[in-house]
Image (cartoon, rainbow, N blue to C red; front, top):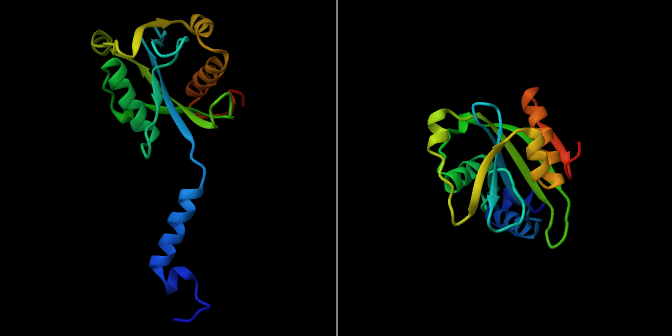
Amino acid sequence: MTADEPLYKRDPEAWRDHLAEGNAKQARKRVGADAILRDEGGRILLVDPDYKPDWDLPGGMIEANEPPLDGVLRELNEELNLQLDPSDLTLACIDWVSPHGPWDDSLMFIFDAGRLSSTQLAHLEPDLSELRRYTFLAPDEARDRLRPYVWLRLEAALKAAESHTVAYLHDGRS
């Protein structure tokens, strides 16, 4: 091998070390994933977490190296005792949220899980260590309970789900 050959050819181990060093220096993003869950009448499920003052969609923050779809499924199981198949969810929205307050930027996903069956509804069981309660609301009522930026994200996700597209937002706006 000659010195003019690229590092990945002449020293694969040094190349992997170089990549690992670059990876360690790159920015990390927080990632969250929520789900749109509806009852048989089409009302949207909102949760009232005990760790913050506002109502929200079910879901939460994704763990390190966890795919967003896996994370939202885990969160739904933890928060509501709801087990869904990955094929039950469709990506409806991705929102890049700029830095604000103490938080760095983040990527927020919303998956549409459609309507829950009567059996699924009967077995919903909120984790009382995390949620005070949950309720199903019409979109107008949901808008009144959600923080404005969460409502913008949900509204875009609902429109995208209806049109079988995916909304891409920047701070809740397209």
